[in-house]
Length: 259
Image 1 (tube, rainbow, N blue to C red):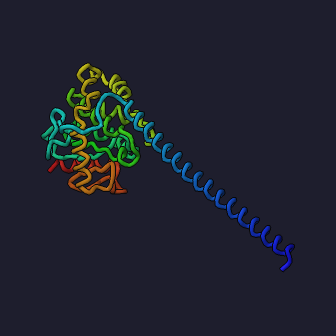
Image 2 (image 1 turned 180 degrees about the vertical axis):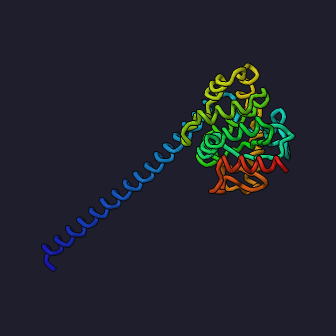
């Protein structure tokens, strides 16, 4: 083999070695970039979680821990998980499982409120309200829990129904956790004469009934109900009955009253 050919092959091998070294270096840089990007993503995710946690804590003073299950004044039923509205002598009982962040619950309230109030005021119907935190569990936030606690505080003050209706009339969008702000809930109490008192404010800010709300939500899940609202009359979920109307409910209650 001539010297010239040997030099050519050697040069080719050297070029190949140089290219392999360049490729190894490029691979090393690419791996470093991938690892670096992964770290940035993890840190970014951690930052987002931190911001969400920080925002969740801006709602007020109450702790996220449930604490003891302190039932509101006058609560009835198993484990005292229902807030009653109406006379005990009423022959018909409507059992409502609801979430103050739930738009379907607000729609039910808007459609049925006048009829329910009329029947309750006439002594023909009693309503037992069970408060749950379904939307908090599905979308995050604390508005369902905080609003339910505030409603229980209103029950302590003897003003549950008025505050209950006020919350629904001022319900935010489902994806907006406005009820997660205790100041918002206290502000809405100003729409109910005599409710915005130091005792009510302390009850809201301390999350006095958080444990009770958690226990009510656990009972809802254990009950296997399809969602909120669940509205039971005579053991039947009338909300799931597409033929049900306020007028039909009134006829059912009137019939029960005559028995």
